Image (cartoon, rainbow, N blue to C red; front, side, top):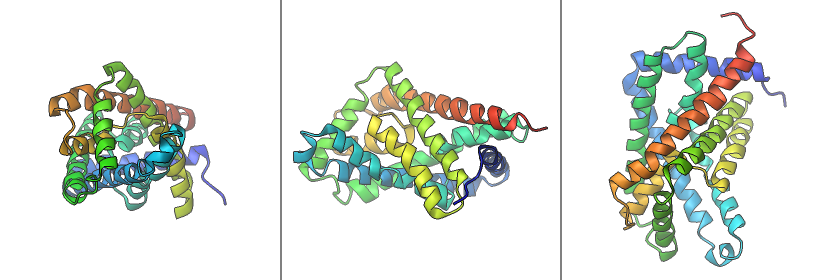
Length: 266
């Protein structure tokens, strides 16, 4: 199978970012619906990751790496749905809008507005999915899942600010590399493989993804974790978001645009 070259991937990212900037200016209602979809997709991936990864406690107790691998293998369904079905994900857009800005097809205003609207839409989608289709139907009621999600939520707010920020950089470096790899393929299988490999890696490594944590933290709180909204936001969501922007916008969007688009005329 023939995949796109790095230069062709960069051109595809440029076209995608240009379209996203245009949608931000003239298609805000559709953009918000797509953002809500993405938040739900990522929460869906988080739920599957939790159910499968923590569903074998007798095995995981002696094989922590296996549990991380199982979680990582399940989570990428969220990004696959985002990429294939055309949803709008804040962390992916951190990278995709940068080529358009560097080629003067988007402004900083476009970027700031897109990231803000999509971030809020992702939050709404993640919260709705978590409350309606996870907690309200009792998916996390069994003790093994209840204990897991409350423990995950507590652990996520127990790290220091800089650790979360650095883990946020790692997470979105991986996620945006996955988006770039997906742009290399033309078939569903190629796009799925492109999404799956880096995302599996970031979950297994324990990096911090702000939109995923819009599932993990609220789910833990709904299940009784001793975590307040302020603690969740300040101790995790904010530093993870800052790290995600750095990992996506600088390490993927800017670096790959500079390497593969700078040789072409504006």
